Amino acid sequence: MTNQAPTEDVSIGGDSIRLGQFLKFAGLLDSGGDVKEAIVDGEVTVNGEVDRRRGRQLQLGDVVTFEGHSVRVCG
Image (cartoon, rainbow, N blue to C red; front, top):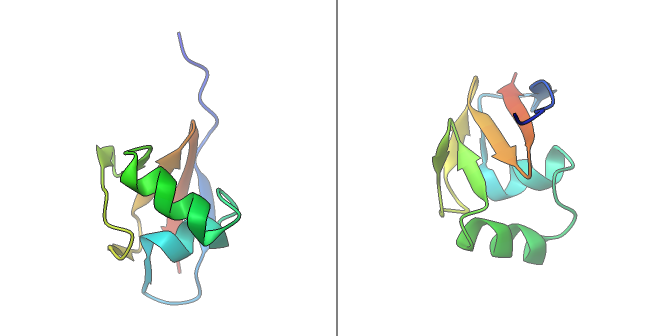
């Protein structure tokens, strides 16, 4: 059984944000290089599905998961 941390809400102060930006903003990754590598390698999911587009526009309510940490996009 996997112990997964509860989903954390992160306010972006708007209606949308790009996936690459959000991973850094939410503190899941530190650098643009790390973000690119994690996304290309399929280590990031959006709403439970792998998404390899760093420029994907996230909307309010989307849940991004990386290495067992889930973060919800909030306004």
